[in-house]
Structure formats: structure tokens, C-alpha cells
Length: 311
Image (cartoon, helix red, strand yellow):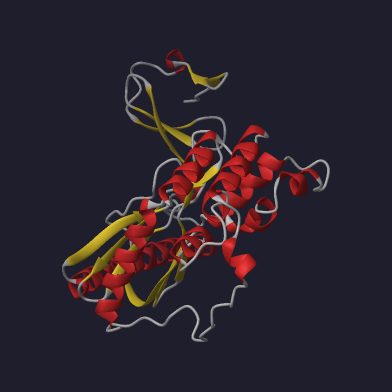
């Protein structure tokens, strides 16, 4: 009996309707199963079939080795899978109760009372934060550290040199505090508004670093908005601080080391410097930057509100 495939499609008329169900050559070096009425999608390679009775000892030996190798590989994969599942179950039992969890940037973090964490690390180019699932591993917590953004540092300083440090970002606050004439004298070809956006975005970037027995996770509070631009959410900093506090309690770190152990004396300001520009002067400067497109509407409103609140 001979079977022929037509254009990749099997022609049922090429087989007699009286043919018994079974495996038949498909004309392409394989065998396809005929169910007695039509061809099925089941295909097999004759090379993997047991050698026919009476085949040479060499062929039987080669098939035996191949079968043993396939069986060993399958057994090894199953053993590794079972070992990983057992390790996950043991870590889950050791982790204990969930203490706290939160989303920081595009990552999700869970902290457990046994000193374990689970981290679903996302990308700042993602649309939705990464989620923790049953396959997310439990990791033994070694350290956890939140690093605030430049903007947050400037805002928490005893005295801010200028409203622009909190409105546009410390990276360009020195330039902006000098007035719009300095901006006009900057390198041609660089848009002032673009510089302001980049500096503002960079100054708002904060980090959460989690060290475990498996990896060091360096997470950012930034993500891509609907326009594809990197942005950040100040609320994520509060989440990071809560996670840091909970982690340090579990680690027994009640008084985290300050960012700098060197005490720096505040500069002594001269009477002229202490006086600084008046509120009216700052408002005019702020309005000029907004008119030139250096500050967005939101940044202008925030800066104006901050100045007026100080009256």
C-alpha cells in the first residue's frame, strides 16, 4: 500500500476506505496515522522506532543508547524541577507571614517576617508594574537601602538656595537662578525646555537597593508615561521608605547609617548674600522662564505657589 501527500494536504482518496487503521509511510521519510477513514495529524519518525525483529546488533545497540540518553535527560529535568519546587516550598515555610508589600516604579516588592523578600523586577519602559506570582522566588534579605532623589534632598535641606531647586531640579538650578540671560548664552542647538525636562526628570530619580542571598536588585522609581517619556511618582518614595523601615527592623538595623558620616558646618553667609532676591524679583524671574518655555505650566504653578506660601 502506498500513500501520497498532495501539496502538503493529505488526500483521503489515496487510501482505500477498507484500509485498517495504522501507521503508513507519508512519502516524506516519516509515517502518518490513518484512523481507518481519514489521515490524522499524528506523525512519527521511523528512526525513533524500535528496530524490527532480526535487525543487526549494531542497529539495536544504537537504538538502545539513544533510548537511554533520552530517558536520562527526561529524568534529570524532572529531578531538577522537583528539587526547585521543594526549595521553593521550604523557603515559603521559612518566610512566614507577609509583613508589607508595595510598588516602587515598575517593580513589586514583598517583605516577610522570616527575613525573606520577593522581588518582581520591572522595566521603566513597561506599561504595568511587574507582578509577583507563585514562581517568584523567596530570597533571604541581606540589606535594603532607599536613596532619595536630588529634588527630595534639596526640599529637606534646612534652607533652599532658590525656588528653582525644587521646581526644575538641582542639575540646572544654578543656571536658572542666574536668570534667563544665562540660558540664552548656552550652547546653540540645545533646547532650554528639553534641558529643563531632562534635568527635572533626573533630579526626581530615586533608588531602592535590595541585597539578598541571590542577587542585588537596584530599582528605580521611574517609568514611561503615555507619551513614552520617563517620569516618576513621589508617592513611590513613601512606599520605599516604608519597605526600608520594615526590612531594617527584620534585620535588626534600628539606626541606619546616614548617607554621609562627615559633619559639614553650614556656610556663613554675608549680610548681602543673606538678603537675597526679593519675592517680587523671583516671581518676575519665574514668569520670564515660563514665558520663554523653559518651565511648563505645572512647574510654573508649583514654583509660584511655593514662593507665595513663604510670604
